[in-house]
Length: 625
Image (tube, rainbow, N blue to C red; front, side):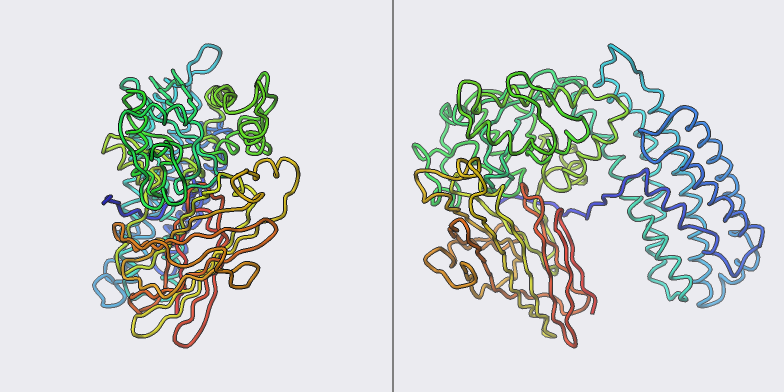
């Protein structure tokens, strides 16, 4: 049984942006109504100067220049000095000290003083940002500059700055969270909530940046070469960890440089196993394999990426003897987002690849144009050219590339597993490891995991949405109805037809194995299935699998869907959970999907309310009542 770690929700705000927000929110009004007029005036003036410092610097590294950094540094220093003076006066103000001894009033004063201190910490964090910007603009540039070693040097130099910002904002966040438990007056509580709304994301971003600066150099081979299994899943043929990996191989980094890239057809690897790898779970029921040996491209059956990665590494090593340091999975959606940053890439013999056309073109080359220059043998050439273009980007583009990578990781289009336990822990904190959530038994949870077992590329064309209905009873019994809706349009063109027609199936028939990962306290009532809104048991539905995995109950079902029709897979179940408000459900997104538009409707004693979400990342939907 695999062990999974608790994952704290990830912030998507960038450190550059959230410091500005923090500075804007923590204005002198937080202490207005008491204290010295001069202190309040200084707090307001200094906060405005802090905003000016960020404006002088620029919001993105692409805007940073030596002159802008100098201007920002001067303004930040002046603002920080004023904030420190004002905060010292407020902290030692006789009236404030006196009120700290008065019941009830002390909570108001204590909170206001903490918010004032938070402004000081924001200024110091801004100073860390300015120092980081100075490192960035002073990076070596010009012909012959190797970007890999430069990147590693930048990460190492920025690590103490990010660690300082992380520690300051973590302590501030802790104090403000403690203040939120006090009995506060309305105006004070309002200012506290504003401060918390800014400090929380800022702290998460600073912590993520600090962790990344600590472990990325080692990941990129700063201490010696690192070789990883490289998986290139095709998300249009969906599998639990992202898609069928028709191409696998190795990628080696040394001193931040990509020194070797080898890609192989997955059938070549699978045919060379020296060990036995029988199908796991229901995989062998819905897909057949020669000699009952699971092919490496199909081995991502467990949606917990570290678990599947360990199995695929064993398969690769069994076939090649190659020792590995971990596994990296990159799907076409991530590559397309990186091409937005690099611009089009020309590949001799294959044409130009850009963000808008990459996914479909690579599918056509690999699965339709299988002539002398087509087929999967072209993928290593194309992949090498695109990777070379990405790695050759100047330092002015690094921030945009990092943002694309972070968004891709949040959406599970990039997943990384490494053998080093400390690095793996850091990857988990950053949400890069693709692991499943592990929530307490008192929290609601849902993950829908699908596997296209038809061999078609239908997932590129199918549109999905989800409806989640919950009825809350005072007893603590929550009734759920989860409906996954599929729209499978008629064939759009000749390419669509070729990608989705195989001799073993009626033209374009979609075959899907679906699993629901639910809380351990779940009791299943039924699994239903509809075609075009009507019951269609001949096409699927019903319970095919029930197992316990870690802290989850897992229920599986299977269905087929002809072209030009819609389908609904509906599961009815009950979960024993505390009846106290608010209601919250954590929905984990499957790798390989762009999103799963979701409508949550909660009926509770005395009312009903709905929430919508695209679920493009792991998402907590909360309903107060």
